[in-house]
Length: 159
Image (cartoon, rainbow, N blue to C red; front, side, top):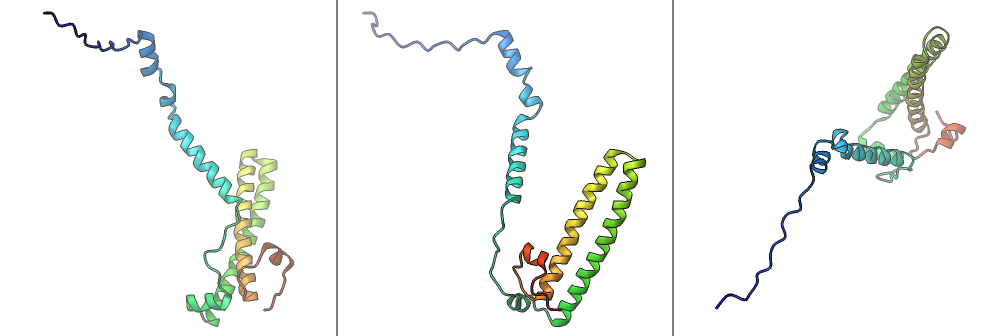
């Protein structure tokens, strides 16, 4: 008696055309330009830019006296740090003035690209000068958590 059961036939693999195979393997433009890495780099850059506009929350809430005790600083250490910050501020301000002169020289006798680079260095130097000034302000006030507005108005300065 013949076998009446029919076994299901497996479907043959789909054949891809020559041009489809060639275009998917040889002409793989996203792989050529490393599109995955490009997307990941842009996500990281976007996240860092977004984080730079957020106000950071402090890791710990402490007073100036508690910070001095934790770091084991003496009055002499504070005076040395104050002097170092003021020295750094003076150096950065002199550097900024010299860069301004150099930037003006580049505007008239150099190139625009050099001027833009000098401007970028001026901005970075100004940020560093602000940092030194702000640290000095906090040491003079013996207070942590000062705001930019406090620094700008020079509130509660006691030398």
